[in-house]
Structure formats: C-alpha cells, structure tokens
Length: 150
Image (cartoon, rainbow, N blue to C red):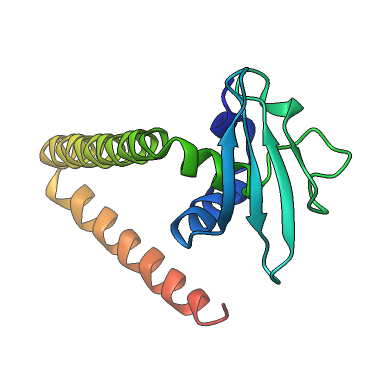
C-alpha cells in the first residue's frame, strides 16, 4: 500500500492543495530512499515531515493530526508530491480515466434500461399503457409536492 492509498480522501485532496500552493518549504531525500522536509501549515506553522515510502504508516509529521498516530496527513502528501510530481500526475490521470469509464458505463446502462422499458411498453395493451401512464403522472405529482418540503 502506497502513501496515497494509506491516506484519507480529505488528506489526499488537502495534500494536493498544499503541493499546488508550494507549502513545502524545504525537502531532501535520505540515503534509504525516503524523504524529509519542512511544510507550512494553515496558519504559517512549520511542520517537520518524514516519509517512509515503503511503510507509509511509519511516516511522521509534527502536525496535531499526525503526532503520535500512524496516519498519512496532508503535509506528508504535499512533500511526497513535491518530491515525486509524476506520481500525482499519474494518479490524477487514473482518476480521470476511471471517472470517464464510470460515466460511460452509466450511459450504457441508461440506454439499456430505456430499451428494456420500450420493449416492455410495446408488449402492453393500449389500456394497460394508459393505466401505467396515469400512475406515473400521479407518482411524479406526489414527488413534486413532497420536494417542496426539503
């Protein structure tokens, strides 16, 4: 499991924001391939951060969220993306691709559902179709009436 996968969704996006706003003040790479640095917090505090790439939950940050906890915070992610911007670029591209695939699948399912309904409607008698139409209108009116209360 990598640093991104070990983080919460909120920490990930805040880490992206910190990276994009250049909150990493200084950083370096240690001999063991890990990273360390100083990251500016929300109120100009400076936090010391060390990232263990192989064992993300062993990473450390002096911020209140991560102190004495095995979590991945936004400061760690900002440092990671500063050191390895291609990782962020690739991850965001993957998210975009997955979103497009999901939208395509939803569109395919919507078309399939519409075709199934059309097939069902064509098999119904005129009387049954009229009855279903009136019931659908009544359900729509009820939903519209109830939606004003929200």
